Length: 437
Ligand SMILES: *[C@@H]1O[C@H](CO)[C@@H](O)[C@H](O)[C@H]1NC(C)=O
Ligand SMILES: *[C@@H]1O[C@H](CO)[C@@H](O)[C@H](O)[C@H]1NC(C)=O
Ligand SMILES: *[C@@H]1O[C@H](CO)[C@@H](O)[C@H](O)[C@H]1NC(C)=O
Ligand SMILES: *[C@@H]1O[C@H](CO)[C@@H](O)[C@H](O)[C@H]1NC(C)=O
Image 1 (cartoon, rainbow, N blue to C red):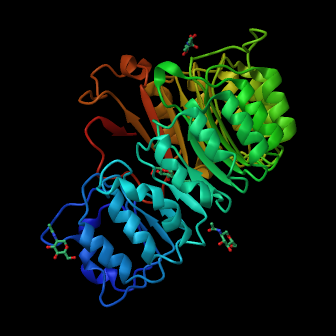
Image 2 (cartoon, protein in one colour):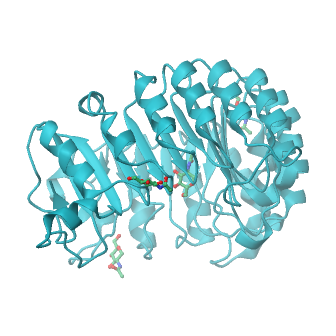
Image 3 (tube, rainbow, N blue to C red):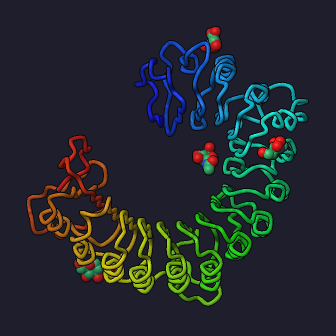
């Protein structure tokens, strides 16, 4: 069960619960602590994830719950669970496969850090580690002993680990399928990933420090040459080249999701100064199963021509600060027969491009356009011809689009458009700055 607001959950819902995954939730205290609401004397719980909660949890309630949940395979704690608490818990979770740690820095008994590896050793089915909230390299020696069996390692919340320590861990994790990291691992670190993790399928590298982004095309090329089974990539970097993208496309034809964010807007090929059209073109041409693509960098209508021509399976496309004319968007709408979601920001596409999709939108889930070149008149025309689609125009909070002079109102630029198919008609809960046409 995935829950977004726990307080509406009646207590009896806990009775046969096997899985509780709190995502983006806020838990409000109403008398008893929710961890005490699971049944006694034992639960069926197999998976509990409250990594996103910001508040402290009742340690004895947590320990009690774990003690009476013999089938627990997945436990993701939040950053407020002290080290000594989660360390003790490990002795009671022999079936644990997926651990999201609590804190490394709060809690008593620093001596116990030394025996973390023996505590983890009791969980011989352990395959996935995450959490590591603000951990430093010193404490990480404790996980060395379990690295060999890990298929998933998530260090995306560990900005303080030095690159050398990251490398030290990763070179021991030779079976990884999934790796989430921050970009301070550097290109050199990614080279180590490339030769240590031949089975890697998913790599996400997020930005650590906005001022000190360190990655280039070299890191991703190294990954692509070592990790030939790669299917999914999210990569923040400083620079990219067409040659690198062409190599990546050739090395990793199994990519189904490719999201590249070059931090500086509209960056050209760092070697030649050309647009990155040919590089992304190579990705859509080689990776026949590509379903999700996010592009950045200097891109012209040409890249959309390639996408429309080759990206037959593409379901989701996100772009920003790209394109030259309406043609770009038209190429995508005329090709890409499987497109479900299209997100466009800060690009020059206007009404002609928008209306070129009239035949398509009903088969799609949604279209988002912000800071483009579309007008209210264009959106009205679209809405009038598509009764099965909600066309929502979002203006700055407080502003309203009804204006006395219809003609000048129609020429007005639309800041944000959100369009989605519906069988229920316009929604009733739209705030004042959303107009449903
Ligand atoms: C924590 O939970 C235990 C039961 O496990 C309970 O006895 C205790 O009162 C709770 N503490 C707080 C501060 O809620
Ligand atoms: C690694 O996995 C094997 C086989 O599943 C198991 O026997 C071994 O105990 C595990 N090692 C550790 C350190 O958990
Ligand atoms: C990695 O950790 C973050 C933060 O807890 C979480 O949101 C994300 O789902 C985790 N991803 C994986 C693959 O474990
Ligand atoms: C926006 O659209 C208008 C026509 O509606 C066109 O004249 C203008 O050049 C477009 N602006 C950009 C930046 O493409």
